[in-house]
Image 1 (cartoon, rainbow, N blue to C red):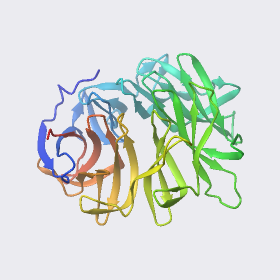
Image 2 (image 1 turned 180 degrees about the horizontal axis):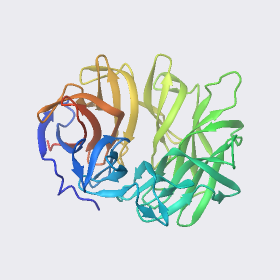
Image 3 (image 1 turned 90 degrees about the vertical axis):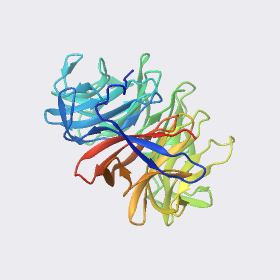
Length: 379
């Protein structure tokens, strides 16, 4: 596992006060533009930071020499490296499982593929259940069992189809593709899948519906079971007294088969737990209009769900933006981190682990960008 013990940045002892029911946090800058990690000078952060349950941070960054994935003290992989005979020309869409293992999308001359730091898992040109991988979409999901769920364009040229796939040590399989029907609704589009450690995949489906072009839903597939797609909910469902108009992309599939997802409703957006039919009520976790820590949320961004099924998320409020839980503000624009002030929270996201720690990217008032690790203090 990666260790933070050799991090080159000191702890910056700023505490953010939350409401009475929540913790305070200590913040540590673990990477910053203009500084060097393992001989690579960081020029920008290109993807949301990742955080595992051991507290280790992994992030994608642009450097003076190219692109790479890094821990706080070393390069995991970078452009120019060769894996399975493929020299990497770009690196994107990292996914970190709770075992601390990384998978990512990488490009090479003539194609692209999904890699770990030591293996090529699948590449363009591979045929899976009769569907040939033409190109990969951004975003992959890597679970603790070493399986990866991903979305890809299929065919040999445009126009292409779209499908979600699973690859594992047991082989690769096509999960679902556009044109298929789920409970008598025909898929016109599918989204990037998320995969839990039990092998259950979830994704957003878009449906052919002339009466409602925004007809969407949350679909799950139990790849360890019969792999029959299950439509958990579709546009028009009422959750927490809100009638959902458009579903966003699920952030996590829980062990009970529920999906945590964003969705929009008339006048706002929110985070919802969508329960499988017959297994409990669906609930609103947080939504625009909620007041958290004295701030009224106006827009919900990306959501992180830890292995305890707790959520943290990016949200906007009048005059600013911050990282929240449903119970409190973790950090917001204008807060101090060491000697600097947070002027923006970048990439509209945070990572969140089972200890309540967060990792996120900020713009500081000295002009630098930084990855920040926030650790909850003991009560």
